[in-house]
Each structure stands twice: as C-alpha cells, then as structure tokens.
Length: 201
Image (cartoon, rainbow, N blue to C red; front, top):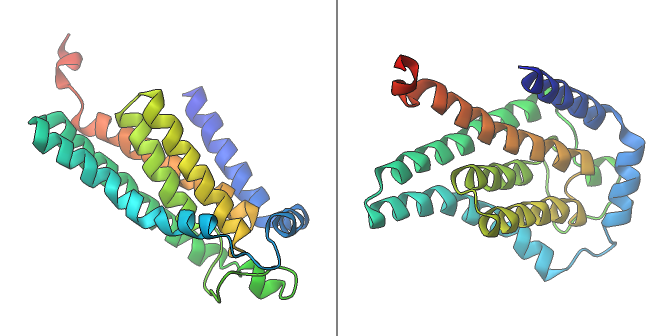
C-alpha cells in the first residue's frame, strides 16, 4: 500500500514539475537539439516506435501459438491492453495540458527535423516505447530481454528531444505514463483473472 502511494505521489510530482518547470526544460532541450538534427540513427530510432511496439504483443502471441502455450497467448492480450491504456492516458493528457511543441513556442531556438504540430505533453512516442518495454520486462523477466528493451525505449526518449519535437519533460512524463500503464494493466489482470485457487487455501 505504501509503495503504491509513493508511486502515485511521485507521478503527480513529476507531472507538476514537467508542466511548470519551463526554464530547465528549454535549456536542456537546446543542449540536446542541434541546429540541423539530421542524424539518420535518431530518425530511425524515433520511426521504429510504432513498428516495434506493435511487434511486442504480436510476437508474444505468435510465440504462444508456435509453442502451444496458452499462458503466452493471454500475456499478449495484457501487453496489448497496456498499449491501449497508454494511448488513452497520453491522449487525454495532451488535451488537458494542451502544450505547444518547443519549436512552435521557441522558433529560432529549437530546430525540428520536420514541421510538426499538435500537443507536446506527454510524448506519445516515448509513452508507447516504455509501455512496450515495461510490458515485455513484466512478461519475460530475463535481463537479455529487459535491458535491450529499456535501452531502446530510452533511445526513443532521447531521439524525440534531439529531433526538436519534444521537451525533456514531455519524454519524462511519457516514460512514466508508459511504465505506469504496463504495471496498471498487469495489476488489474492479476486482480480480475488471477489464480483463484490461492483464495481458497
């Protein structure tokens, strides 16, 4: 109970700081974002978000069919649920905070790799990437799966600031939303569909 309360307080504090601490945000964004953000690596990393994130539940489901493992098939549904939850939460937050992208608010200071409009807070790419990484780490607790998954999600996080389309606080909040969504769905799944035999022992 205490851990859940601390997690909730931490999230609230993070969202408050992300939404209000503008000075450090734009200063760090300027340090990361070059005048011509043309790195093919960071563009590819950013673009990989949707393909990789979609591939996680599909891959888990495919593994379930290949091995005939019913538990893996159920896990794929949980992973997909985390993705859906992340999208709902991040899109709702975008509407609530209605934050301009950094290049729109600071033209000539932040240089986007392409003309991009819409709400900035939180970063949808980052939240999706971390939802995928967290879900994968929950379902497959192997370091050689978890570490690369989180390294990739962290790279997506950095790429969005490098490319000039998000503030650092946008990606920090996106990471929190993604990880929170994965653990929330996992918790709900255990509560609703967990092993009932434990309740009768």
